[in-house]
Length: 247
Picture 1 (cartoon, rainbow, N blue to C red):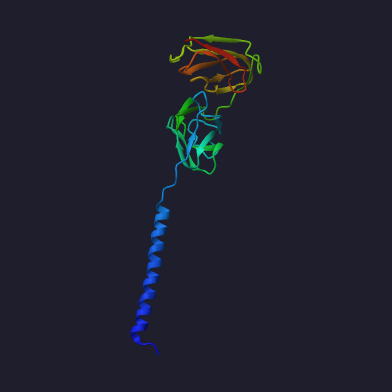
Picture 2 (picture 1 turned 180 degrees about the horizontal axis):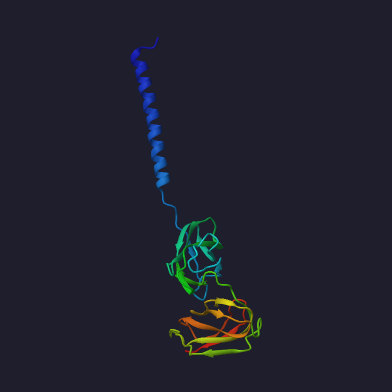
């Protein structure tokens, strides 16, 4: 028969072993869960400084709360895997954000969801990082119908076009930098259109086309041209036009 002292020693040793496993395992779990996830290395910029292949989805109208259908899809060049968290500035009562993780390097697309409620109509510029790339969002009046029209010359070069203002590298564009394009209105309504951001600037326009038939749409230049040269801009579903930037 085992003596009492031997049994107690074995029992204490067993209890100590169990406690060690429990405590050590708990510490390991805390270390594991406490470990911060690696932040991914990536770029959102294209060679013009805008968000690469930015696609704005959903309708944006004054006073109408934004939903998951309102988002922007951007192309990302991932250099190293890990987590990401991206958000834009808040302008006109709305902003864009998204988070997740990249599991592979290379070109990928991500969606940033809009939140908030637009306050007024117009075209608004948003910035997201890293690199502070920009994209624009057009907001229309609530309840207003969208105009349907064709551009003179589309899909080839604009045939009835007027260009106003001067365009110089490093010089901020103003309300004098205006483009007028002749259109044929099929269905009256409101238009809110912008071109892509190229060489540091873009053109945007919004207004009402109250009657069917001949009309003129106006686009105003926004931004600062980066370098001299000849650049081609095209409004959504429109005709391309050329802007020459001087030194």
